[in-house]
Amino acid sequence: MLRFVAQNESNSIFNRVEYDDAVSSGKYTEKIWYTEADSKVRDTHRDVDLVKIPIDEYFEVGDSKMLFPMDISGIDINAKEVVNCRCSIVYL
Image 1: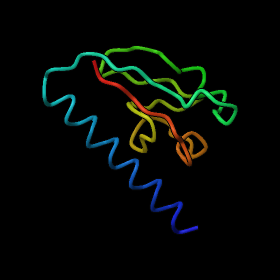
Image 2: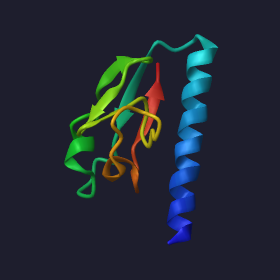
Image 3: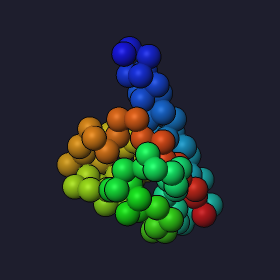
C-alpha cells in the first residue's frame, strides 16, 4: 500500500514541476490531456482525452478542475480523479 501512495505522490510532484517549468519557460501556450486509451481509463478522464486548452486554464475532470493529470492543488479535487491516474499531458 505504501508503495502506491509513494508512486502517486511522486507522479503528482513530477507533473507539478513539469507544469511549472512549461509555464515559466514562456515557450508554451497550450496543453493537451492524453489517456492510455484502454479499457481501464475512467469515463471522466476519457471525456478530456485529446482536449486542448490554454496552458493556464483547468481541465474539467468529473467535478474536479485540474491543471494537469494528478493535480492535487486544483479546484474541488476528488481523490478518485487522482489516485492511480495514468494520464499524461503535452505542452504546445
